[in-house]
Length: 338
Ligand code: KG4
Ligand code: ZN
Image (spheres, rainbow, N blue to C red):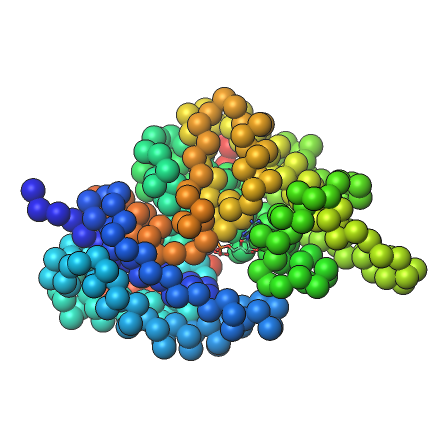
């Protein structure tokens, strides 16, 4: 049997990434060109700057990926690309590159949902077995996804306002930390105590949705009041209190989802899955199912995860033609509890 090689391109936000996957699970290369240094001084991703950087490096990334993988274009079976959700200008750069490459080399094009990519990165840690539950936590999304079978992603709960990563970055900004602040808050949280007891929104409610804007406001108000009184708050305790509130909510909603949907595996993925506090809580609090978290290097945005999700689409014959358009607000189908 001949080998199956899929080249995948990811450019939905501030990472330009190209990967080559061999035979379902073997990532031969996963080149990630991060632009984060260009966005830091603005305290967040500037869409125009992101698109311009993608244009500058995408061709080099594709060429380098083929060289690192030790293959040529004619060895490939398909080209995969993230078509949403994400920043429209950023997505379009990756899509233009993927379409041109697919057309020039006579290859099928596989459209991939970025969040499916985050989820499928977990398959580098353990073989995924269906049905499974996923908690997806990133800069733009916070959702509980039930996956009855490979490639069938159903949202059963999601944030009604801010995403978790977004909340981390916003409170980080209030504390004067560098964007993106998630990792630094996680480190500081481990040195402090939950003394501020911030609200745990919707934790007792029976649905599976989340809300983080109240927590963010409580955090901002506390800091604002302290500033007006000339008081100095301990950074470590602020971080520990914020993180404790986030984790209590994430864990309790995940437990509720697991009690409503019988599964054997829980995947936790997305940029915030790199959080050590979250990993510790999962280890102590989720004991009935196998918890599968992608390796740290595959938690943030990368094309390796897109290739892994693309392989499922390849198996199911889900290809697109060159009229494929970017879908900045692409969502999984939702599933209401029946
Ligand atoms: O998945 P990702 O790389 O990009 C999106 O698709 O959004 O997620 C980026 C987010 C940022 O908000 C960042 O602050 C957060 O992931 N993040 C973390 C940690 N590492 C990254 N949040 C909490 N703890 C971390 N260790
Ligand atoms: Zn992402």
